[in-house]
Length: 180
Figure (cartoon, rainbow, N blue to C red):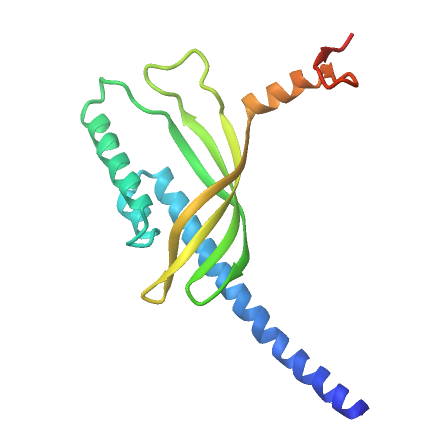
């Protein structure tokens, strides 16, 4: 009986690296797609951005509309100009997958690199970090973004508000009361 268990343990140990390698490969593939997507957004490379989305994704319409607006703004440099951002992936972890879909949790950073023109007195934030779910769908053997959903976001405005909230304490009846 010990030999059977020992044999099973050896077989399981031999198969584990293959499963881990496949998971690592999948994680690398989807992280690469996210990285290319964020780079394309930063560089206003709309065809590169579209290339990271599944052809049947409803989000492609948003990208194409954004491209029209951006091109119109570039054609009229004297007119109002949007702010510029740098997008960067902080982490990407695969949460699950099957033959058709992959779900990954992605943390990304969005940094303001150029103020809006005409500029606002104070743009709402300079740096924002967000946590979201990305769903990928296979297309012709390649994983592409199907959709995304934000889970949370944090920026300077939120941090300032949280500091001010800390100045208040809650009495036992649940109503807010300024701290003294």
